[in-house]
Image 1 (tube, helix red, strand yellow):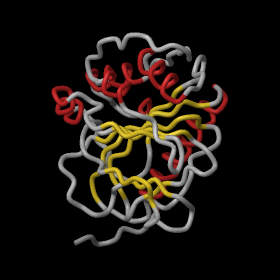
Image 2 (image 1 turned 90 degrees about the horizontal axis):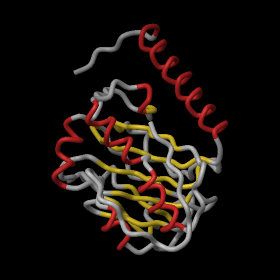
Image 3 (image 1 turned 120 degrees about the vertical axis):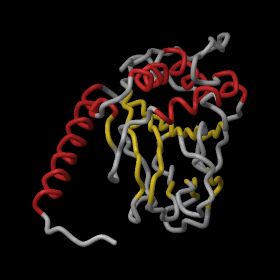
Length: 230
């Protein structure tokens, strides 16, 4: 995976991209209610989205998994490399007016949503920017639609609701008031999460934490009593 460097300052011409519509991203305004964010439908080009979705790694259980720990098809890896490349980092640095030079990136994937997922929370203070890209077909369910909230207590008090349909990007600045969550949904819900982190020590710690969590989940699968499923 690449970790790109970016400069803040005057905007530069948007370079061509095989998978991403960076011109559409650049043309989208940053909103500040209830915290800095933007949503871009069609951020992943429609002609690329179908192939990316088909190459999405198989994830048959809930939770978040670092892309580096999964068996990714070369075409999917190329998409992730572009997502973490210098053009995207520069675009985000300019949009959020933040210096992302030398900030490490981490990509995690989700494939399944559980009933307990979506609880109201803020992202860690060690994350600077969160970018979520959704890769699902037409979404009819009421649950699973991420909401940007005005507080920590009411999922109904939101400024924006994002339908997790394929190619849609939601990005926000990770602040202490950046509350978000969604109503419960159980089933397949594919997303790619890209974070710019404060430093490389955080990246190492996050990867270690995910590895320990995955090991524990595998252990439980072998030790807990089997239940009948219907």
